[in-house]
Image 1 (cartoon, rainbow, N blue to C red):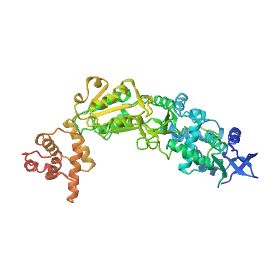
Image 2 (image 1 turned 60 degrees about the vertical axis):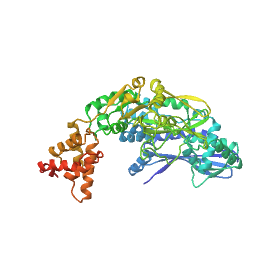
Image 3 (image 1 turned 90 degrees about the vertical axis):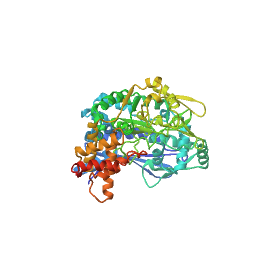
Image 4 (image 1 turned 45 degrees about the vertical axis):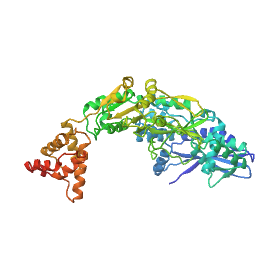
Amino acid sequence: MKVRLVHVFTYRILIHPSSSVQKTQVFLRITVGKLRDRHRAGNPHYLRDQLVVGYGARNALELRYVAIRTNNPAVTATKEAVIKSRMQLGDLLVQANLVTIEQVTHALELQSKRGGRLGEHLVELGAIDKKMLEAFLYRMPAEPETIAETKIEETELLGLLMKLIYTGRLESVRQYVEAIKLPYHVVLELVDMAVDRQLLRTLGARDSHSLAEMSYAFTEEGRRWALDALQQSRYSGPAPVTLEEFNDRVYLQKITNELVTVDRIREAIRDLTFEDRIIEQSGPALNSGRAILLYGPPGNGKTSVALRFASVFDDVIYVPYSIMVEGQIIRMFDPSLHVPLDPTSLSQRDDLSLVRGEECDARWVACRRPFVVTGGELTLEMLDLRFNATSNFYEAPLHVKALGGCFIIDDFGRQLVSPTNLLNRWIVPLESRVDYLKLHTGKSFSIPFEELVMFSTNLDPEDLMDPAFLRRLPYKIEIGSPSVELYERIFRTECQRHGLSLSHETFDLIVHKITVEKELDLAAYQPKFIVDQVVSTCRFMGEQPHFEPRFIDYAIDNLRVRRPGEAKSSSHTSARISDDAEALQTV
């Protein structure tokens, strides 16, 4: 592949031994931006550009801006790789199902030729409506341009950077940026501040000509400063966002912003068999964003239905790594609960540009809507901030981590805490859509309670809740025992999955044994339970899966323990089978 260089601009700057190059960066960022725009607009075969850093004489910093272009068609594949490595806004739009990958690729090619912004080219191509793009950009947290725009005290950010350098043994600016999740030029401001205060000393660029590889080391004062910062708080992660920013973000991405349709629900529960009534009742409930009560006898799919609701929502939301409230850090992002967008589709830059692009604030993680499930282990303490006295920072409670998504309280009524006490904790949030949390210092603060809460129970709701609380649950969906027709559909679906044939006589016999002999109600879980047990027994006996009389007995006996005085079911089954042996010899 042939490429040729066009226009090399060289800057030679003398710097004081104790000062950094941050002030120089400000000038270069503007200058390089102008050069880049000019070359992209004037060169239809523009390929890329870069900033090369080198050292001449002592205390002399040499910076060269190099623009590269090619006329060789063979460069197409390489160019596409470069384009993909720069995707930021495009990835988020694709993940939100607003544009396609092909449309983003085309728009990025236009951006490389003409300059400008990616969003403008997507609108020009008709890939997305301008109003829709503006709404999406409004919801996407923008990178802070300066330390002041982070709305966090510079001493707090400096202390956090020192802790990250110390605990992570970081050396280069690139590593600092990756750890603290702030833009390159903001990190340079912090590094400059640290050098001015003689907390860091410059080592120079190692094994690279990139400014991002400029290395620093602690001074003795810097090491003491970092240890003192760790003594105050052991939190050493990405920079936090403010409580005000967090609350605004929760309102922007509340779950009611997304419209749930009948088709979405059908797609979500396509592998489950339910009455249409369940779909028709759950749709308005999900769109309302109000609390939902799922009740009915055990084994009929309440939990399965609730879990399928997670796939109904496909919007992209942003979750901060941490929040700062009154100088206290609250860790918010939880990789066990929050599902980030596919990292293979999001861009991973190989270089750090001095020119800010259309990028999301890295302190926020682009995720799917969270779906948090808790069961009998739930206690009142789990709904409050958890303060770690050793590390001196907080962990957000479960329902706060579920903001913007769904929070399911499964097996309600079987928690360690009494249902009355648990319900009293939820009355105010469910009514006012605001929750209140308290720091260990005694300071209280409020957060929006914008999430879908679902209670699932197999107990009688009127025994668990008083009328006042039942009134605050506007949607009550009963998931009861299936009808015989629905039960047969479920049974035949399970048989098909295992290659089993089910005759009408065999099905009638199984229903008779369950409802008459065992005196049990039909339940949606039973077909899978019986089929799995029959198949397991057949495999153990070295036989092909089929309905053998005694195998059916074994499976149905496992639905419930035999009561005292109850006859063994095998004798009943054998009698019935002898009258219709042919029906039960299906394979």
